[in-house]
Length: 295
Ligand SMILES: Nc1nc2c(ncn2[C@@H]2O[C@H](COP(=O)(O)OP(=O)(O)OP(=O)(O)O)[C@@H](O)[C@H]2O)c(=O)[nH]1
Ligand SMILES: [Mg+2]
Image (cartoon, rainbow, N blue to C red):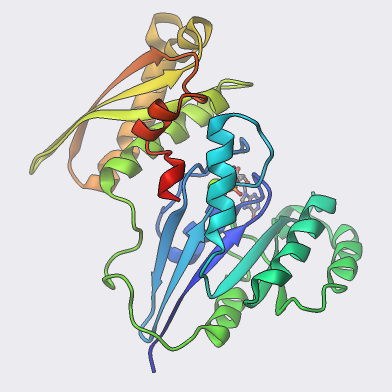
């Protein structure tokens, strides 16, 4: 019997949703960063077993911003649980609060098995964890509670086994050699954004987007030019840095990773462009792939 199904992974920003999906798939499907609001799209991570296909849906962390971009992110998360076969609500062991409890409670209405997974146990003590687990146990409808570390790949098997148990019989929805629904162009833009998130500080990360301008893949060389879009001249200066040092740092780090992904040498040209209102402009958002109508 072949089993297959969709599993949405939801939770507050920064709890480790993308890290968990990457760890389960064993490939980098989604970018991760210490800054909240890293993921902006619903991204599928496909885990292919001999007799199953688990399709994990990565989602933007829940938050209540007011910008058009925020509305897009909120809608992505809301629609992510429609039609899935199971839901994983992910919590950060050290930061569980009322928002998490409300989110768990809400999933009861969806009517599919819900798993509550407490992540980052590598940096949490049992004394701290115990009251959290006691409180979580009050949610009787939850199918299973799992504690794990996505980063250290600890106890992933227990989650996998539990999901496999409830996975319905079904076909492989995607070719079995495919591990994501996104194309290389999308992933290249995301890698550039990840490096920018990593190296830039304070308010800038939330205010940037990356757009691929040209993408030419040859046999031994892939040429990419991309624009980092930001919201002000001051941000532009910081992103470029003194003698273009910051842009070089982002570019060098991104290029090394893109080379591994596309398996050729990579020429990466980065430009920085100011678009003060990009997070509010529906047309620009749509051009960047954040179109609320697609959700
Ligand atoms: N110590 C520790 N850190 C972790 C673990 N899992 C994730 N992290 C870190 O937590 C941060 C956030 O991880 P992400 O996977 O980007 O979190 P996310 O939930 O996808 O965040 P958004 O996309 O912003 O909603 C990163 O710095 C990860 O390295 C874990 O098990 N242990
Ligand atoms: Mg994420």
